Length: 144
Image (cartoon, rainbow, N blue to C red):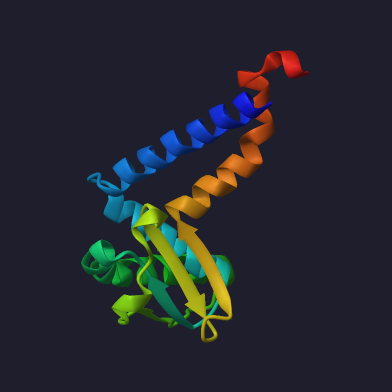
């Protein structure tokens, strides 16, 4: 049982290192944009602050207008309402996401009371939780 848990933890560490590679890839800005759009759709607020890693600040500031435009278009198409959200990037560098987040973004609204964590680490944890039964079945078929 301990060996099995160690193997699963090793698998998670490897997946985490792959997430770090994604965050340094050429498609990362497009991924950030999609994560921001998804977060805006989930959070559904007009005043939103985007948090990211220190190294991603310039990229996020650059893509926020395109993400907001995409969000507005989606919402207008789906609901017929043209929104005008005010989306800003966190200016307090002490509140930047840690490097351990492996990239991605966190969106907040209502003075931080509403949070959408779209970091690579949180998404990996979600996938891990959802797929753990399948992963166990593949790695340890005799346990069934």
